[in-house]
Length: 208
Image 1 (tube, rainbow, N blue to C red):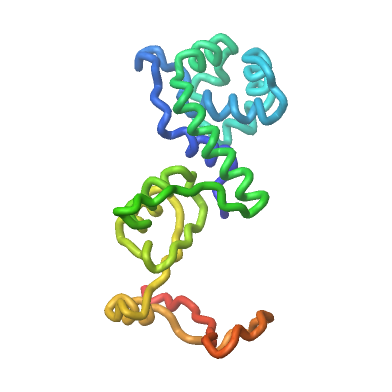
Image 2 (spheres, one colour):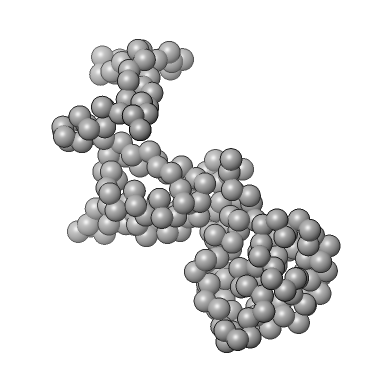
């Protein structure tokens, strides 16, 4: 089952630096941020309205957030957001917006320019960091079939599908041993000509 939306909102703001002294932190920063984002999406315009929304939705929020001291007051929301780094907040909101729009429209919303003296591999880690990977499936072509990229996706609590090239014989043999062939796939796509190759359906074999 996919993670709850509230959990995903918190994932988009994990890089926020808490400006408060540790002894003054009665409320978790990600709790404050998540409540504020949900409240604004629900129509709240002021800190008072954010706090009111949080109190109204407290029972629902307690299923997904720690809330050790209940819902923060409007003064707490105001003080915390006044001290947060606007660039970090903007980055979190941008990541969240990407997730919301991409989920609804199935769009690709990020890209990176590749240096003329470099290749795509070096830019992929930075590109992946722009997304909230939790509960998502990342697909990358054979150039991106790298253990470091796979580890980054797993660390971000996501899953991946990486392509293997035929010239990497060792990897192909190791990978193909995990699958069994089901025969030709039925496709409604027209024949692309002499250069086209038949394709089949494979299923993952669980040898655990």
